[in-house]
Structures are given as structure tokens and as C-alpha cells.
Image (cartoon, rainbow, N blue to C red):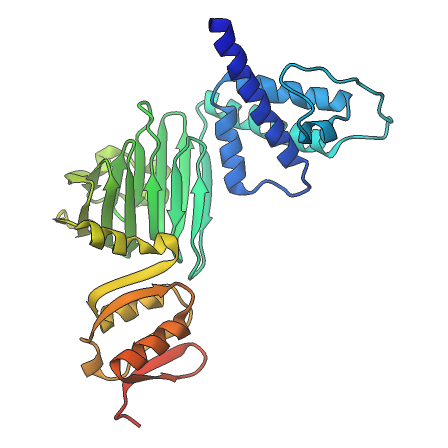
Length: 350
């Protein structure tokens, strides 16, 4: 029975390895997300790396790309080899060899030697992006956001430099998942949470699991990079459970925590699907949110408009349509002021 299970496992690994080889031969370089996913796949077991290496070497001996793309070869089956011209070097061999050299020998060697891997990801204004990390965790970056990922064999640290991101931390009993913001840190294991930072102002929303929020002063030497931050730099602030949100100014040691109803939680995180949702917020608050997602900024020209309660669902990237709907519904007008400003005014203003 053990042999049957092992055979099935090897068959599945061989199938996945062939899919990666075919992807690398497509002529399009791997995206950063694909590289992270591929490295995670390689790291699942020595069998994954052995099978990928074996197929790469075999591919060099026989031109079987067309057969691999079809269903003609099953796990363990043999194909007839044919001699290749001396000048023929398959693209996949070059691609796989280069990646194997830089990743298996480099990335895996780095992990075994206790080294650190650092990467920076960011989005422009109005852009969202999802990043898959090598351990199976993921980061969904909202508009105008930057994160620095610092992974080592003993730790998983992420520095949220600006903006907002939703983190889904894969369980790892040997490495705590930490998100560093301003002078604080959010620590989690096997959970998902959203963090928004604006200067010293921080908001944390937990969507599942449990997180621990630490906050306190740091020295100048430890604020430059997440890699230099340790638990000794912080004072304990509290824990958050699924459905709770915390607002605080980092470094103050004070934190306001409240429970979010499910509809409100979904509204707050609607940006993940490309939308902004409001339910009675003042127009002044709505304008502030819209301005995060567009290079064209809204401004309120008449103070009496600021308190108008707004509700609705608006697509990110469709500012003109949103402004047109709001002005028609609430009876104010939108006037262009230059190329980067739209001023909201009462109809009585000329």
C-alpha cells in the first residue's frame, strides 16, 4: 500500500514539474508571483526538486515538448529518443538551467546558510496587486502601497512603508509572521488581516484568526528596515480577534478597538474586488477615500456640502462616473479646476 501511495505522489509531482517546464518554454518570463509560487513548490520536498531536475536533464536528451503538451505520455512511460543537432539548445534547458542555478543553488543555499531574502513590492495610485510569497502566504496591495518583505530561515518580517494591504499568513510554527508599521508591529500565525498606515495613524482589521499588536518607540537604527526590528523594541498593546478593528497612533501606547458587523467589514474591504462602498459616511470622508485612488483630486468648494450622508457602491477607476452620479443625486455640481482637480459646489454658486 505504501508503494501505491508513493507512486501516486510521484506521478502527481511529475505532472506538476512538466507543467512548470512547459510554462517556462512559453517564451514569456515568469512573473514575480509565479517565481514565488514556483520556489514554494520546489521547497515542498526533495522529491519536487529531484523530479524537476530529472525532467530538465531528460528534456536535453530528447525533444519531447510536443508530446509533453499532449496526453500521449503518462507517468513512467518512455519515449523514443532521437539525436539533436549539436547547435540545438532548447529554450527550456536554458531557462530551467538559469533558474535552477540562481534559485536552487542560490535561494536554497541561502536558506540553509541562514541568509536573508529581501524584496520590495508596490502599487501606483488606483492600482491593486496580489503577491504570493514563497511560504504560501499572500499580500494583496491596495492603491499607492509599498511593502518590504524580509524572509529568513528564522523569521518572516514585512515592512508596510505606506498604504494598505491585506495579509494572509500561512501557518509556520517555526517562524512568526510580522508586519511592521511606523513604530509598531502586527504579529500573526495562520490568519488574515488588513493594515492601513497613514503617517503615524494605523488601522488594523482582522478577517480571520487572532493577531497581536505591539507598539512602542524604536531607535533610529531599527526603523530603517524591518529586518532590524525585534520584540524588545515594543511594548505590548493588545490582541484582536476576527471581525475586530483597531485604530491608534503609533508610539502613543493607546489603541481603540471595536467589533465590526459583517456588512461593515465587507464594505471596508470592498477594494479587494475593485469597488468602494459607503453607507452613510459624510461627503468629506467619501472625498478623502476617493482621493486615495485617483491622481485627479476632489475638493469641496462649499462647507455645507461636507456633511451630506453618502451611500452607494462605486467602481475604482471610474471617478467621472461616480462624481456624475453623486452630483445628480444630491443636487450639486462638479467643476473642473485645471487638469488635476474637480471642485464640488452648490448649484447656487456661479
